[in-house]
Length: 346
Length: 164
Image (cartoon, rainbow over all chains, first blue to last red):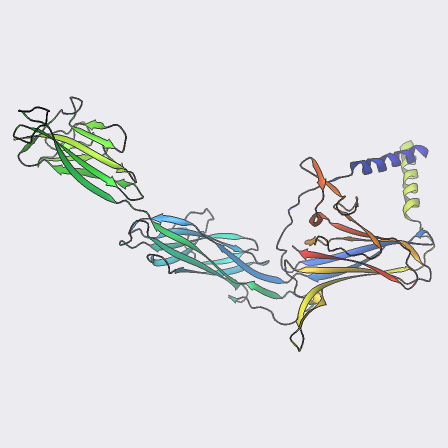
């Protein structure tokens, strides 16, 4: 008996010594579901004539009513090019109600920008992968979005071909909460609350957010310049453009836009009364290509129209120089590509 | 066999400790719990004032504050003493810091319903470190009334909680 009491005392001491309580998690579940019954039970312990009495409990209960809320987020900017069709901006619609709701979605062009997108349309991200897929994401409204649930929504728009670099178009997505039972907007229940029934409180049944289409395009400028390298009389000292002189042509393609331009090819007719000079660069190559500040690369421009070594440089049968891939593929934004070749004056 | 005997004795000791009120015929204390919501009303003169409406008769949605009041009344001819009201914060609700009222009572709090301590003295362990529990982490409120309740008197405890 004594040993049992000692044991009990030890257990009691251990409980006091622990002192602190481990927290299972401090984050509270938010947005309690409509219809949840909230019960509060208090208990009183007391004594009469120093004799502890049976504890008494008392409860009170209420039922959580329905609150309707919606939130839309956007605020992103997407780069587009003139003439692009179905350019995508991304939004997120969150059901911040405490009940499942449907939502209608309305896309619109805004003012205060440079242009409007054409054929503006809205699509719901059906497979929730955050990427617009025309075959999969065909829905234009949200049905059965659970409380606290989010859905990605895309606005599609065609960018006019007349849009220029850095111009913007602001688009807006508006989401309206719809009662799935009536397929109409949620109606605020203005009558007095009836105990035990769930009533509807519409806090915010419409929300919107805006995104921006920003035109980012390449702007190319081409300049051609020539210089005299040597002439038969003065050689390289103050050479003059006289018959027999060696001339160098430089074709510079500058991209002053904000996006890289893909180059198909650069073609330049060999000027009349001149003859293309082969082997002028590093002794064996015919054309110098300089991309930005990088060291020049060189290629062979075969006569006769066939690029036998497939380096992208060739002289066409018509007497024009053509430089394309792989010698040149693109001009980065803010960069210049310069093609140089030499001729002799006849 | 020996083990069984020890267990029996231990059970008897616990029974003695907990089930003392052998002479009580009726409950000497009545307990009542009410949940109310503050509602703004405007009178004929356009003056605004706040009234309390039963939570069950109000629209209570996430974010609504409910005022819970527990009232203990002594309905016996003898005084009741050692009056202690314990009230777990309802599930889906969060105690509003600083909202607990209890005239003539020492108020203590608990996170787990076992260890009670005054505000600021309740410790919790999180990620291996011990810190004071935050008010919104209190899951139980306890009022220990310092004086005996005379016959016919009542005492109350009150707190506010927000629906999560």
